[in-house]
Length: 77
Image (cartoon, rainbow, N blue to C red; front, side, top):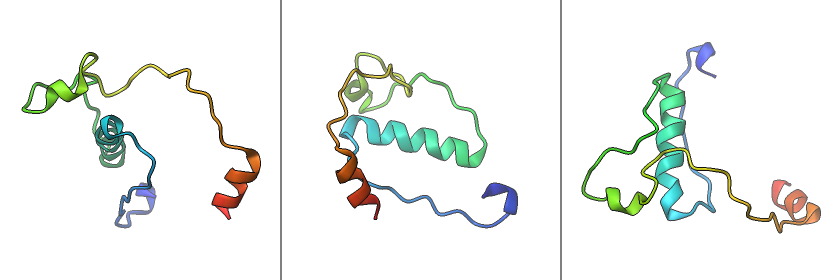
């Protein structure tokens, strides 16, 4: 969309964990603005909330996807 030179409105969805929503939107906003950011979360009043990694990008978890194909199709319709 950026290549068309039109304004972009970024809006959220749902289902994010509280710890990851700020990571996600920080990264997505940096992509939309074309700005590369450090992976390290800087020290600030609430940085302890991001312990022990203090990183934007975290390793992929081994969480199993329990969404059925039917459920996903229903939600997308």
